[in-house]
Figure 1 (cartoon, helix red, strand yellow):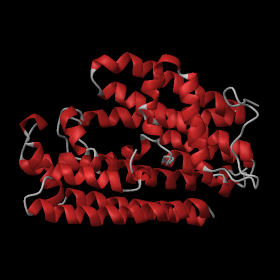
Figure 2 (cartoon, rainbow, N blue to C red; figure 1 turned 90 degrees about the horizontal axis):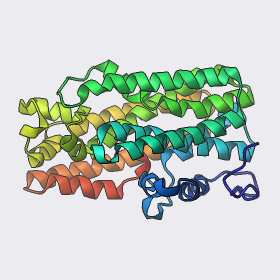
Figure 3 (cartoon, one colour; figure 1 turned 180 degrees about the vertical axis):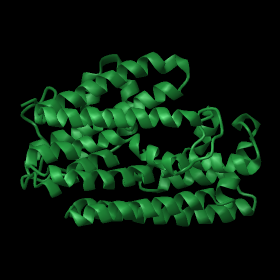
Figure 4 (cartoon, rainbow, N blue to C red; figure 1 turned 135 degrees about the vertical axis):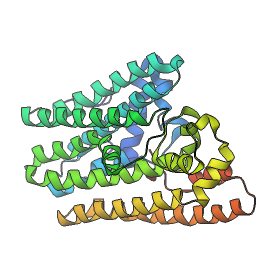
Length: 332
């Protein structure tokens, strides 16, 4: 079995076999610091900065998905969660390499490759069957196809349809690998279709909320996400370069875009909850209940922000304040 970097004798798992997401996250951060060399600082910028202790969604869900497949081995669950974090950050870094300014592109590409290899090595060690690797290849293809399809929203305002919302979720298709690993280890391959459906619903919800929260960054980069596209079309603009950011932020709150995203996210989380309930993934259902509580809180705070903006307040300050107060697992 592949051991964790430099400390094979230390596996932060409770005596009762429970695997805590914060322990996985701490080990992931340590592995980044010790194994990435001169790229450690850049790698740490992807959620590891400032000693963040609240584990991201990718760690939580990768541990919890062991339940419907009856996988109880703590080391397996720990490593699956680590692999899921590596691949999750691989996609984030690669995405930024295509979006960001040129000065960081080369470093981001090298870092993404490093993260990809680390995740793949863990999965190969854990499963390694040809069927699993074929599934993993399919997930890569699905994520790549979705990402390339959504490129049409770079620097041009194109209306969103239902296929776009499907693609938004499919960008995160590598998340399915953790479920596939458990399915091959625990013998629950017939459950995979339902789990994959639930994962895509949750991924789409989280991405839409992230796009709403990051609207200013996307506006500057001319990445026209769904909420931005809706507002810019309402303004009759052809480019964000024509837009007044303060007006865009205000209209996100006052002209229905934020409400629409919140409503869509609620339905998607409900769809995911139903998918996981039907297969007995009780831990994942409880996690989605927590995310829905966070979404409800976000909706309430944005409603209050809408009132502040109507009274002359700053929309950008509203979004900044809200993001610091809400469950960070709702955002990438």
